[in-house]
Length: 61
Image 1 (cartoon, rainbow, N blue to C red):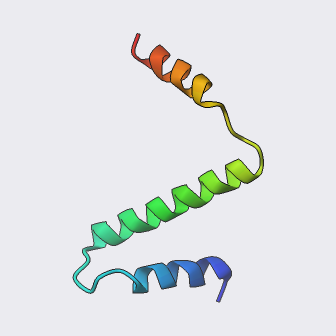
Image 2 (cartoon, one colour):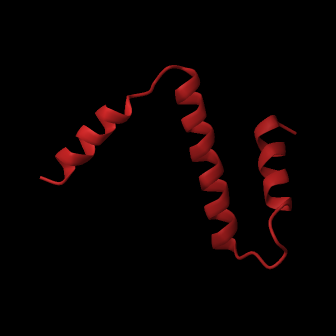
């Protein structure tokens, strides 16, 4: 089994028995987004808090 498949299988197994399909999919999506964010951080693809605040302010215009 591939590492990705093993990781996601473990994540699914850790969910409560009464979890809905939507809850499991949401948890998997969250996990993937966190992994992508960590990979971006490791690769130096980051911006400062000040830059992020500036971008958010520009969305409000």
